Length: 593
Image (cartoon, rainbow, N blue to C red):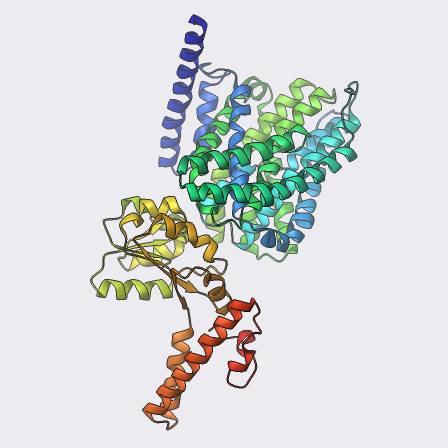
């Protein structure tokens, strides 16, 4: 009993020290505009074994905090439906392969030239340096709303391939190993077969086990069960991959992708995201604690020089690849600087190389320090990237969470030209409106005209709750998101039953995707303006008022009938006989109505 009490006391004291140091450092570095990651790294260095020595074993903390990376990849998977992932296959398999290979081989050549290592040691130290920090880059892209931009998607494709590349990189280490082979250890080829089978198993489990389970939990309507189900999906998929020697984060990502089309996607995001944020912070804290200051003191110029070389080499290569794959100069340089640091999987591969007797512990510590220093450069490089890209909105827009919004009875999500018009008319009708947008540049434009628009993803349940959606009488989704459908909005409608839900549809196809939920009020974005133009034209061409009204009424009747038949049959060509002219050419015209 006494030992248990002593253990609990040590655990709570250690947790208080870790969180206290992180709190002070992150507040200070955010105040300086350098971001939370650098704050966590510095806090880890200060309280780590080579600093004040206040913490416990950093490797234990790191192993626990790696769950944060696993949760991060699961949440990213939820954002990517299988169809969208298929569209990214070229960037993942070709762009990602070229980035890892070229950056890794370049660092191999530099290490071979600068340091007196064998070619085997230089190879197993150089190739991991081609990887970037998923834990650092993805939160940056998400927090700035850049994950769905061209360079954001390509950055993500590279990071995903890097996760997959852990298997061949570990295979290279095993092939070069000087240590006695472990009994029963699978070959690299067998490991790849295991990985493919495991991914297939996760896909089947997601479709036939997890999705029905989520529907059952949705009927029970207990939020705690969503949290348990989400964490179960993450842990089970990650454990399966880890057990066969593949990246656990890759397993969590596959589980997320399998649930990306689930109507409960946003519910899972809202429930799991807080765990991800805390554990990612602990991860960077542990990385800082593991930094070997003695190695830096002994070889400061070598380590700083190699860290700077790593950042420079990766920046040049990734910039060139970005241009080769169709990005402009500015997006390419932003992507290159974003991915220029070393990655957390480098620590894993250095440890494997040390265990394979390919490198000495001192060399593993030296290159671990190089990765840590390169991570510390990312906040500064992002400031440079913003200036190079002239992304003024990043620094000028004041981003405020909807929790700070005054009481209102209407929420408008999206403040482009469509959302602005809706907002103005609702305010003219005497309603108090909370405006939300995820684009910092749009928020800045609104602030110039004295309008307070709050920042965030307005399709997330937790954000809408903070905005007061539980008491709202109406929620408008005026965003230009062609993937928004009835399944995505169903959980929102059930969570906020008092609110009427109005949705902007980009075109006819999206209107059909929203029709399964008859509780949604759907408006095609240029439908009424097209009718208005045609009315004006008919009047100016000499038609009588009654003839114009009759023509418009007939068009609305036929269009409504045709839309119903298209929805019932699931075929865009259905009901073509109802169009004027007898074909369905309007579906393929440039106009979106």
